[in-house]
Length: 171
Image (cartoon, rainbow, N blue to C red; front, side, top):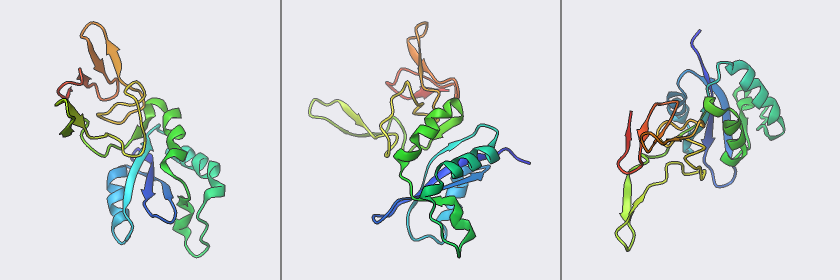
């Protein structure tokens, strides 16, 4: 059996927030598949890839049982919870190097310049304000970026990206 990750997919809706907690070998592809036939926008928020997907999913379902959508007519609804991204952020952080947050953009995409001509970059995550020592802006891993004095650059132990944050990353 293929190794699976436990994913968090948000259904965006003004009336309520719903988060699907499920398992997939490819969380991004699963999000695209779920979008088919769903009129509300879906967004992959993050995933945990710790090698124990069945246990992790069951633990998270139990943790958030009170927030379950609970539609008796729909067996698939038991994986949907009334949760916001902020609710599951601690789960991703607690997973450490096995926790990942989905990026919404390229970390170095310039969206404009301030009045002093300093470039302004797009936010990597649109639902959380994360620091580079917490989370890698390249792969989304919660191992964080580590400063290396020998090179005077930052390094991600997960994706092996090396950067000075001036012009992108070197993998």
